[in-house]
Image 1 (spheres, rainbow, N blue to C red):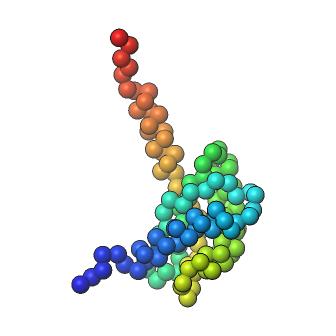
Image 2: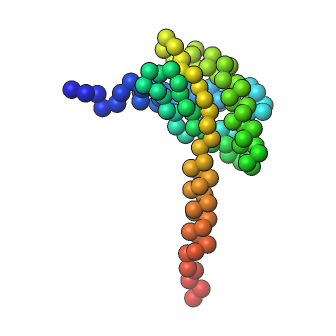
Length: 120
């Protein structure tokens, strides 16, 4: 009987939870803004993890700078992640901006503008 969720899915979920805690408690760099970890995709061999994040309250320039900063801080983030997880090897992390939140907000604005108003 096959498992409902594979190991990579379980590790992905655990990395997502632990990264949220690392950003809240362990990273003391003032340059890091308010970051939400939306999704983590781990390769089948657990060697690589793509971390999709959203930066709230920022313009495009800030979002790009946050991605660059996080990719520079990967060794520190991996160190904190390794202390929290029970894995022999922690996946290499690559941070990618997830624009689905921005797209959803834009669609919501457009729908709000199109919705007919009752002026009676």
